Length: 361
Image 1 (cartoon, helix red, strand yellow):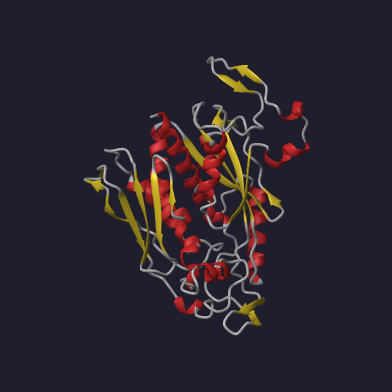
Image 2: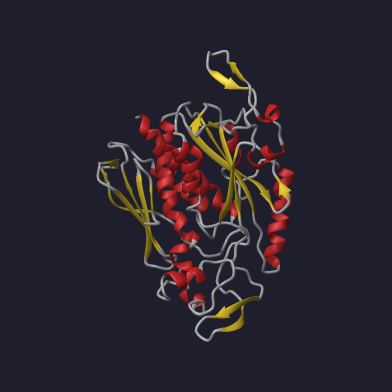
C-alpha cells in the first residue's frame, strides 16, 4: 500500500481532498501516553489552510476527531485512528479534470493507473490535503520525542532566489526553532522575510506560483541510531518526507556541495568535548555517518516545487477526444506551498526518527 509507513510504528493515511473526511491510523504508540491536545492543535494550525495571505482561501478547522486508541486522554494500546472532516469543499471547481489533466499534477498518471475511475476533485488522494493527517501523526510523535529531549524544527531557507540564513550546522538550538514557529513566513532573517513576501504576492497577483527550499534540523539525537545500507537515517527520512506531494529533492548536511569539495574539506574532524562526548568540528555529514546518527545536529533540506495549480492558461489534452486543448485551472490554491509545508516536513522527520528510535527501546 502507498499509504503505510513504518517498521515499529505503522502509519496509514486515508481519504481524499474532497471526501467526507481524511484521516490517519497509528499502530505501535506506547501505552499510557497522554497527548497534549492544545499543543497538537497549535501544531496543526500551522499547516491549516485559510490562515494567511500566502495560503489558499479554503478554510478548514482541521480539528481531529479520535475514533479509537485513546481512553481517558491516554493511549490505550489499540491502534489510534483520527479523522478530520472536510467541510469546505467545492467539487464543481474540478468538473473538467477527469478528461483534461492539469500540467504538473498527478491527474494524467492517476487516470492511466486507475483506468479513469480516480477521484479528480482537489487531486483526490494525491492532494496536499492529505498532509493534515500526516501532521496529526507527526504532532503526536513530536511530543513523544520531546519527552526524550529530542526536538525537530524547520524554516524556509529559500523562496525563488531569495535566501534566509541557514542553521549553524554545529550549534542548532531550540531557540532557533521557536524564533520562527509563529510567523506567517517561518524565516529567521527579517530582510529575507520581506523579500520573500513581496515575491510570493507578486506571483499571486498574476495567477502564478513560486517554489523554494525548507531546511530541517533535529537536535538532541543520541549517537548510534539507524542502520547501514537500506535502513539508514537518510533512507527513512527520505521515504517519509517524499510522502509530502510537493517535495522534489532532498539533501543531508553539505548535500550537493560535497561534489565541489576535496576530502580534506568535506571530512569533519573529531574531538572530545568538555563533557567527554565525541563531537565533530564541522558538520558536513549532517549528523549521519553510514546511515547512523553521530550525535551532531541532524540537518537536511528539501526542494519544494511551485504549486502546479495556477491561474494562467496552460496547454493540455482532452483524453476522450484525443485532442490538444487549453486549460485554466479553477479553485483555491496556495501561491506558495512552503509556509504550510514547514510543519509537514517536521512531522515527516519526527515520524521517521521515532520509528528508528523504537529499535533501541
